[in-house]
Length: 247
Length: 243
Ligand SMILES: Nc1ncnc2c1ncn2[C@@H]1O[C@H](COP(=O)(O)OP(=O)(O)OP(=O)(O)O)[C@@H](O)[C@H]1O
Ligand SMILES: [Mg+2]
Image 1 (cartoon, rainbow over the protein chains, first blue to last red):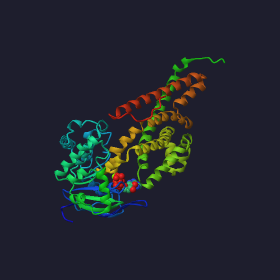
Image 2: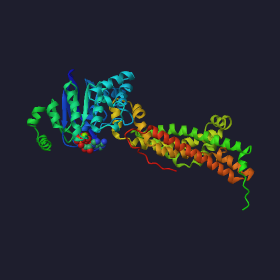
Image 3: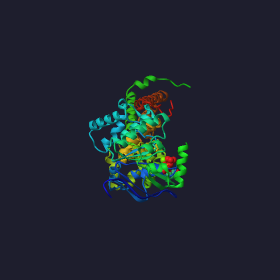
Image 4: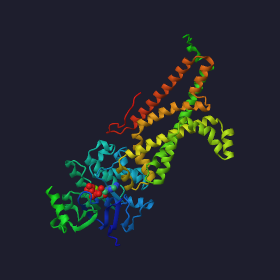
């Protein structure tokens, strides 16, 4: 494995009981690369992303983060997970903590950073996404777009080597999608390695280096972004794309 | 009926003192049992919510045993039967050397009985926290213990404050079962007063008022706690039963 490979997935398979949700998935993401994953509902996109940072266990295959194999459980797994940021569809901010406490929780308790240092970093990141005035607010007092930007900041506060996004804008009102995508675009421009599950084809076109198309638990094709939008190779991807672009 | 009322009896010595001691013992037993019930109940409730099959089975058995055997029978079992089942040395120590064995037994029995009920509430509370919270905590690299302590329990405990309040009220009422193993708590003392003075109405009225006062105090304290930990921007979720 060469040093410019940030995330490597090989032969990953997973079942929920008799249902095989991931079939021999393999994918390599280079340092600084942005990869968009798309595909029909139930195709296994969320499951794949959750396996990549080990919050979901899998039966076969292997995942490497910066060349280090992800153990299935234990302390070492938690340490490796902490290096990959994750942003969820429904934000999953901790409702009982203020914005600042949300952002500082893992840096203080996992990375053992001094509180003042963690808070200073949190404030700097909040300012970057334009939410400096919200540090004392509770999640329930914020809009969806604000909550998702804070969820991104919460992940960034851990100094991740890569970021995973699982449909970060699909729970948002249309007028709030833009503010979240803008933060993600800026991250991509700054060279963050990103895997983004999304149906925002505009974002894919402008930010993604490559597009992964999944169907029924398998990675059907991986293309350079331009090639994907110009002419997907598989019929299934072509059908999916025509539907989503017509939409 | 020719009952002669005499409220003054309640203020005479030693009866006033008896009531005072009874009240003190009721409070001491209930509060000590509450400490046991909350700590054991939280621990069992957390283990019950884990995805480890063995832990779930063991905690399930614990809950069934302590919840389904009547409290009165549990008091008898702890007081009369358990010392006989233990190795001779330990049994002797319990019967002879342990200070105030009936009080200690009452605290343990009431504490463990209530812990099983609190365990059910805690694990239901944890189940009521959205699944994504557990995932978010895990994704951030928190250990299981940290996830429970920092993310899941603070939310679960907020959710269960209303049923927990009624459980705490019940502990004070249930402490009167300690009468059956010879603890001179409030109800026992009341009975003593009535059997010596024949002023049963007065004695039991006094006890009733004291129990109601305890209940009101508990309710007021729990409401204050609930208001204090309520999260800004949310409407308080629980169901309230006023009494
Ligand atoms: N915890 C679970 N238990 C059982 N089946 C599950 C579980 N989670 C997901 N699945 C199933 O696995 C399959 C893949 O689900 P997944 O959520 O990964 O799909 P997805 O591509 O993210 O879909 P969507 O676009 O709807 O989010 C689906 O058939 C789903 O029903
Ligand atoms: Mg999904």
